[in-house]
Image (cartoon, rainbow, N blue to C red):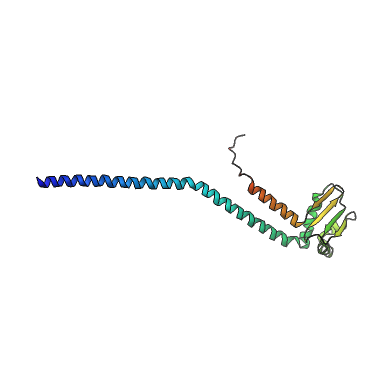
Length: 178
């Protein structure tokens, strides 16, 4: 009889320990689930913050790359010609009076017969060697106004555009309904 009593006490003690251990395991499990839920809840904001930080770096890197590529290209005769043609086209319909260039740029164009012969031959345009101009840029003037096509001005406009796009609220995808 004492053995049965001891077995019963042992079984009750075992059951009590199992309940206690199960309860402790459930408490620990619920604590971990709570921590995971908090992490999952915080994740979108952390991802958004990381993307915003990366976007700033990507914009700065893109701007630097554009500056390097344009800077290297624009000081060549072909780059100067392309810059001038683009600037003249932008003034389409207006009577051009003067084009201000850095003296070295004008000399480069005059040395390279194919670079801007068609533009330089236009007698209605006064070609001004302007030491105030930076290499690779020009200012095109007409009676109706002018166009500042200096590289630093264009890069400044690009920088401002990039900064505005970064400051703009992100666009939301459309739902496909009109």
